[in-house]
Length: 577
Image (tube, rainbow, N blue to C red):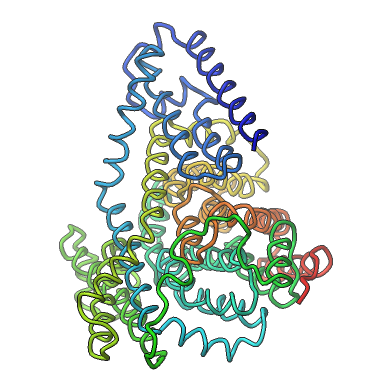
């Protein structure tokens, strides 16, 4: 304990000295000018723009406290923005004053507010299902199918693929359903959280119908417009990128390989060994996110029924599907794209229409509405079965929401830090430093790595895609004007951004996966990162470099999966059962 306190004090002293020296050497007349642009901040501050995410990540691992780490990273970022045009004392004072404004701005954003509401509301649904005995009934039913750790993990993977339409919904639905089963089969919460996280954005990013596809199509269309291709088939290009999304595909295959061989590596091996040999699915002294296992136990004497879980969950999923369609449909009709309006009006149930409407839908609002409807159905079911009265049902629902308050706090801080990083121009600085002239066959790999770094540092795959795509397509076209080469480079942006976001400790999906599995957040990050990095290395070395040199993807992709299989079989260690 004393050693940790000394380390924290030493880090604080070093940081203070650094800030003082920065003030002395960098506060000059040019700095006193008004700077509004992120590009100017990136040019002025240079490498210092990476300091806020770096502090947040390093302090998270040192202090084991995510809230404090995100707070420090945000404060340092605001300080750097203010020091550009103010003195040290004034910038320091403004940092704390502006912090509250950043939090309020994050909360007032409609998307963010919708995400927090859906998280809290789904927490209420989970509590109601638990109180009605639905969770326990499903766990007992699945436990009969899950004969051991292997089948329990495989069922979790299948459920992750089933909830393909949105990464947030995936993280919040699969965990609470499978947690009792994996606990009984002595699968660690760290492994459960990894499977959930690795089947969230990776599957949503390549699904034909999802909340991601519209955004990706927009980026593709705009990128090709920059090289004069104004009538490009964006959906056709999207489909053609799927075989080249090496990280998305390989991480899904990697999960299955670890399940088949029952072998793990590094921190994950330690976690799985602990769970198998001692039955402790969470580390002693850890702080699981979300509700505890016994917080919403079913009422005594009630008859357990899987329908008490299946019906509310189906209402949530079907409601989300219908909501995505209706929200996107009405949004398109209210817009100004006459061609698109005509297309969906003439063929309202065509596959292309469904795909477009899903892409245009506001996922945060739709999932909140679906969760609210699911809550009403769960309350009605419980009251009709005389499991609880209205007042008790509402108390349970609110109790489920309360258990996720800390998740909301972490999300607000992560969003605030992300906004500060954007204003600092961190991504623009990284692009300017890392996008130098390179051989053509290395360009997709460099793009993948650069997208991963930006996404990891900013905690957002959407933002990274928006930054990188307008640069990537013209750059690839300028280096090698080949349709296939541009396609590979485009895929590298889309999958590299997902890899970085998957690893990032300040990513909202990382936070939600920890919450859905009731895993310690930092334990999830620590055990997941080696796996993600390993799959990313294989994606580059055995994926992007060979296809850039002309090797067909139908050879490269199976070979990459085979390499992963050999690594898992001969490098990873078996877990004692």
